[in-house]
Length: 110
Image 1 (spheres, rainbow, N blue to C red):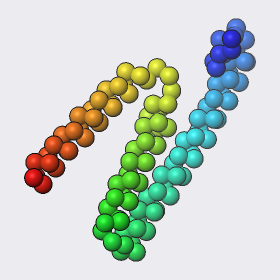
Image 2: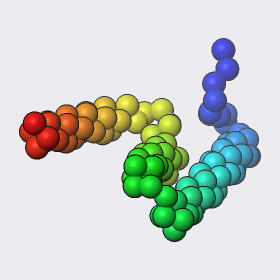
Image 3: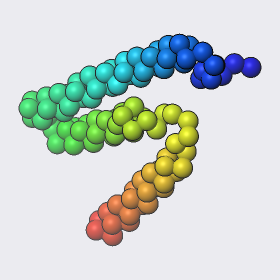
């Protein structure tokens, strides 16, 4: 059975492993940062070209949700093991927030 981390007694192996993981992590950060910049530019273009409100508002909300996912999984390291408890609280808070917004929207519209 192989593991994804090195616990050898050789410090050079540990350093090489950490450098490799750090380089891989930095690559993911840069890619997600560039994607978030492109999503922001797409939102500005959608507003700049003055599309219909019925297209622009949901489109910007969709882009915002995608950016939140990038923020959580790459910049806040939620994709790593050991972050199950913070993820549980985060998703529970999200669920309570969505239910609250849905309840208030229902009250206002009906």
